[in-house]
Image (cartoon, rainbow over all chains, first blue to last red):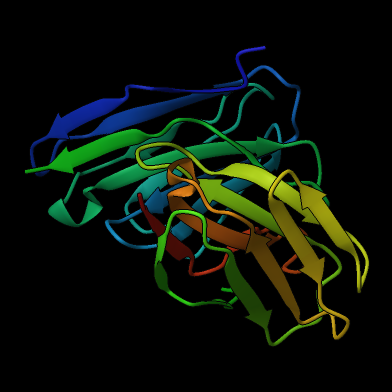
Amino acid sequence: NAGVTQTPKFQVLKTGQSMTLQCAQDMNHEYMSWYRQDPGMGLRLIHYSVGAGITDQGEVPNGYNVSRSTTEDFPLRLLSAAPSQTSVYFCASRPGINYGYTFGSGTRLTVV
Amino acid sequence: GQQLNQSPQSMFIQEGEDVSMNCTSSSIFNTWLWYKQDPGEGPVLLIALYKAGELTSNGRLTAQFGITRKDSFLNISASIPSDVGIYFCADPSNTGNQFYFGTGTSLTVIP
């Protein structure tokens, strides 16, 4: 099993550009989430999904969109990148509500 | 969102020393999870606790589920340089479908 795979690992965007961060898991997990982590900070929940076709907002959703068309994939879209979105983004999945998350290795995004 | 307070915020210790950190919540928890994040990596689950008073070990790591169900403790014995990282607590179910992490404890081990 590959676990949770995130691409790209590094990305530089100009202000106003859009892009999609990819996340795929091969563990057949129902729950998936996106977090951002700023330097010296903890993990903040952006969006999450409890199954294909179901998504909801976390604590910092503004500027980000998600969709969940399949169990395996949970892409995160930045519609118009801003410098405040410079961060490390982690995707994670888990089998159900009482389980811990398995994390990907992260995408390091810089918006200039 | 859910606020989980971890203390201390950071620790600088000598190799070989024991480490203690804790996590507290204003709500009663049913499960406590402890994660470690190595520099430049995603968090990895270390220990899961499911009952008040439960004591669980994973090598040199020992975690306890507080009897009030509002706190948890993580101890590391005989620290080594690879223990460096950020340690997070979390509860997977207390906030419904959302999943929040504590504020983190940053550990530096000085050889």
